[in-house]
Amino acid sequence: MSIAIPASISSRRIPVLPKRGQISWFEIVLLVISLGLVVSGIAPSLQDVILLSFLFAGLGLAWNIAGGYAGLISFGHSAFFGVGAYTSTILLLRYDISPWIGIWVGALIAAVFGSILALICARLRGPFFILSTLAFAEVVRIGALNWSSLTGGPEGLSIPPMASLAGMVFASKATYAALMLGYLVFVYGITKGLEASRFGYYLFAIRDNDDAASAAGVNPLLGRTAAMALSAALTGVGGSLFAQYFLYLDPTYVISPELSFQFALLPAVGGLGTAIGPVLGSFLITPLSELLRSHLGNAAAGLHLVIYSFGLIVVMLYFPAGLAGALNKLTRWKPFS
Image 1 (cartoon, rainbow, N blue to C red):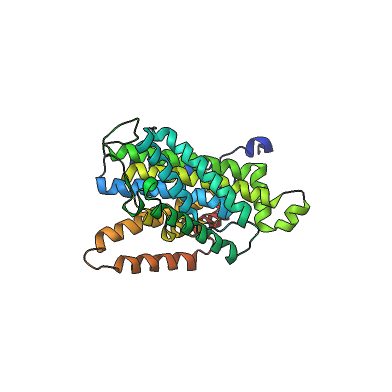
Image 2 (image 1 turned 120 degrees about the vertical axis):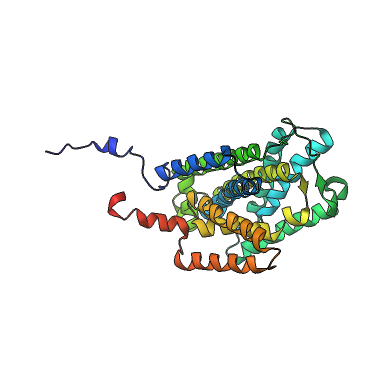
């Protein structure tokens, strides 16, 4: 004798593997493991790797809102990162405004920059849009380098290394790790909510076929502008957290094409257009990059880049849909059906 389970009850069952718009057991276990890494007493060098993995996972998620969901492949997100970092730092050093407030001011200014970029360039397609984002980031970088009275120019800005809760400077790396994990969870929650919302479906429609979306009553320019503004704001928050951890801003790094490429690389490896993809990409790439650099940088300069690049090639060849795509294939197995 079998008992029929109502569809309304079975539909509320938590899925094992990641699913669009729903929290899965996989994500819950990943969060528990991340919390365990934060509270465990591990070596400071490994704490650096862990908190950077959390930070770049959040930044990859922020980029994915524009690049993965709205189809705006941007190589200029380091501009928003730098705007957020410089805004909170300048407010702290010049006006003694706490970074807890400055971080949101930086996010707002970054959102304005993102909106302007989208309004001007979102009508461009393919490589033309990508080049426009690169040019935009270069303009911001040159501005930071030459506006010495505000940004410190090539010398950058330094935050006094005095532990203070109001100044968002902590003596313990575990506290920074908890802060970066909080940022990751915050951006991840926004991403999962976006996936299940009507606006999220608008973005998917715009990405796949903006002409069809426009015919169905969706405004592609408005959707892309909103997506870029949200993506830029969340990237600006990450930039402020970066500044508070390293306590120094160098415009040649915080507003650089290399950093923009890294933001895009994480979703590409983990799974473009998925929430879990940038997280998996960061948890793979960031530790690999940091550990190879620390172990091989002095003994064999440049070898870590060769191994790192080879690993990325292997992932892209055998998992063209990213690590998230590999997880989705597991859902076809009978135990997960």
